[in-house]
Image 1 (cartoon, rainbow, N blue to C red):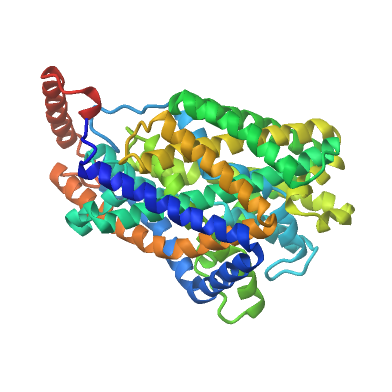
Image 2 (tube, one colour):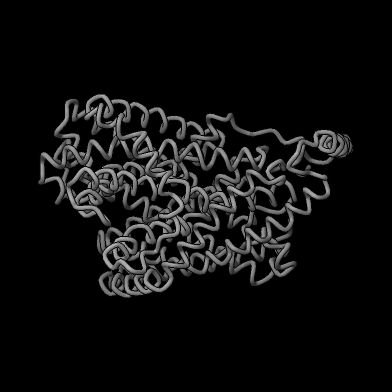
Length: 537
């Protein structure tokens, strides 16, 4: 056990202290003067979007194409771990945890509201036309598709590789050792880890606030429960207790069970909407929207609309905002999915991460988007409702409206718990010197802190407070993007040396891998027999 004066514990203390001070300062400023805080952060975020929109388009594309390149590279054969490491979770549980951590509340919150917004205010098509419907579904899929997962993958790959294969701690700063050397153990490393914690807190607090408002909106629609801060405080309190119980039970139990539950509930809700909604239109739209997504993929990936002011404004409000938002979420999601992916190969990891959640997203947003647009077209009052209410208003116009709303509230709550539980693990890990098993007490501290921050934001100005912190997330994404660039360079540099050492090529070379695996397994057995602790092997 380390001495309290050891470098590791000093760094741990610095990361924790600086992170808490920064987050506390922002929350206090937001509580004292939410309008001014929102105006200032919003102005900065708009400036970043206006002047760095082109940069977000390029860096997002680079991260995605980097992941795709690895699938076809000999590096794809490397395992995210030692040769004797086996996957900790079944493939089904692993995939559900990837999706729950990476999207969660957002897929319910924006399931109908984003397609409706694009249908009535499209980027280029005439509003409320067949072309507008196709563009609405395509645009929503584009925002929630492989680009987001490419960002998560670039961060997660470096973390999983250096932690499980190279024996580094789980701190994000350690992935930069091949580039920065031992400077990652000093102030530069602390700065990177503080930025990671800050981005995690910001992203998750906003998500929890959004989830709270939608649960409140659903209860209002179902039971007439008033929409106010008192009710929202009670909702946060109840859900906090539930996710702390999940955090206390441990990663292998709590998050795994909740992630599987999420997929079961989401599947029931999806199939029910498919049956009760405009089924034939949805089924015909599925291959059409998927084909449109693939057909326009490269052009839209790199389209900054420099000569089209209307489309450029739309990109600033939607696409560039999403790219910055996913960038700000990438440390949280990347750290979590790296943690649950030990024992997978690079190729398996990237292909699963890019294809499975994107396929689910295409189906989900097509079913809910087409249904939402069709219902909103017949009931125009829905268009003017807030996104936290729209889903329940659409359910209200369908058969089985009450069971659907109840299922949706349960699903949002379950996603809420999963996201918060995942976040407490990640924050505990980052403030425990990268420990894969942060103590329950540390996770509880961060869990209470996250819920408190979410409620203070609601208290300090409702949507204004949330929008202000969303702006802060966009701002935080800019410096963090440079860290991700270094992570990709660092990962490729080390992984390419590793594959050269193994003699890996694109063509099959099983005999070289077999020799290496045999040598590694013999070394593993030797250490184990000599009494080395299993977790240190």
